Length: 152
Image 1 (spheres, rainbow, N blue to C red):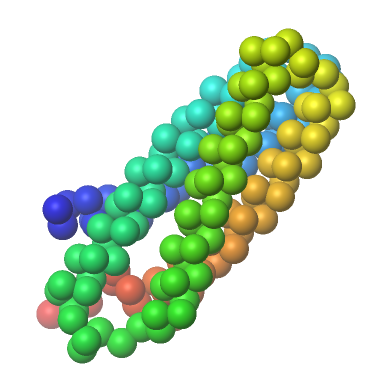
Image 2 (cartoon, helix red, strand yellow):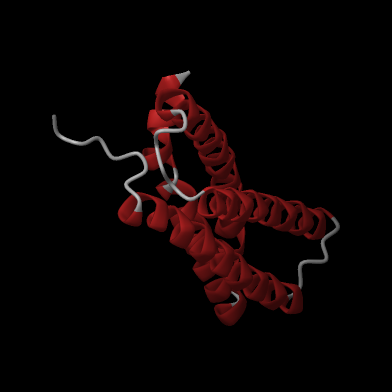
């Protein structure tokens, strides 16, 4: 399953982009009250959640593969790995909850402008979670060289 681990750096950028674009589309839809934006937002959110699941799964596999390959010789701070994993999982669950909640309001036909503004604000909170997750992930790569193949 090492091939899944190698996909992690490629997959992680999709949910980042999709969740951020979702948030901006939600904000624009709430501000302009345009139906095309309010119909596009849940599509982006759904795709973001699917890619976030893939990112978390490949990240978990990357961690396991790293333990197997590097054993105890590879020195990188487990606290940062744990924080990255924690915030990635929280971000996934957060946006999944947003998707479920938004879908509920659409089905019940209660998605008013007020709720669109609330979802916009919740999307911004989610963007902060993305920032935290990415910040710890970047520390792992750029400060500690996790996942970097050195030249022979």
